[in-house]
Structures are given as C-alpha cells and as structure tokens.
Amino acid sequence: MSGAFVRVCGLSELEEDTPKRVELDGTPLSVVHTEGEVFAIYDICSHANVSLAEGEVDDCHIECWLHGSRFDLRSGKPDSLPATRPVPVYPVKIEGDDVLVSLSQES
Ligand code: FES
Image 1 (spheres, rainbow, N blue to C red):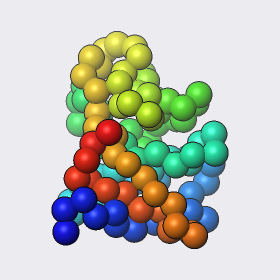
Image 2 (cartoon, rainbow, N blue to C red; image 1 turned 45 degrees about the vertical axis):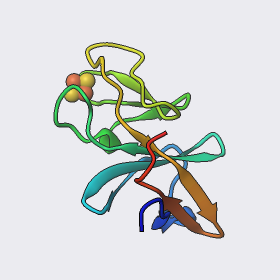
Image 3 (tube, rainbow, N blue to C red; image 1 turned 135 degrees about the vertical axis):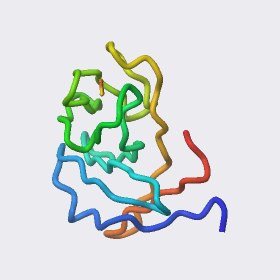
C-alpha cells in the first residue's frame, strides 16, 4: 500500500548514536536514534557507493567515513564537501517499540 509505514526494527535494538543498516523493499536505510529522535536516511552516500551506516553520528549529522562529508539527518543535505547532493530522508513513526518508516514520501 503506498504511503504505508512499515516496521524496520525495534526501538530497543537501536543504540543511541549508532546507525543501524536495514533494508525496506530493497532500499537500504540507516536508522539512527540520536538526540531523542529516530531518523531514517538513505544508506548510500551521494558522492560514492559507501554505506553511511558505517559512519559516525554527531550533532544530528551522519558522517561518511570515506571522505568525511556530513549529512543532516533531518534534511539529508551535506554540510561539507566533497558530497554536494543530498541523500533522501524518510518519515519515521514510533509505535511502542516499533520503528516504522514510510518510503513513499521523502521529507
Ligand atoms: S563517498 Fe561519501 S563523501 Fe566520498
């Protein structure tokens, strides 16, 4: 169903500031619990084919480990070179211990 929120993992499986890589309908995502919120960002850096989930989280950003671009978890926008294009971010809902993501509307 389009627009549906789908469970990707349990909230209790997420360690604060440690990205978790999941797949939803074949789309790789990094799910990040930080600063009291949960974010879902497309897991591939917009600069090269690198998993963002392997990078570090700080100040609501996730850093690509290869060349160090930092992507805002709220907007997907990079705030430093070499990446210049944003990566998609997706809406997240928490229901009990379930983390739900909708792929239909990038936010
Ligand atoms: S691959 Fe991510 S910044 Fe280069």
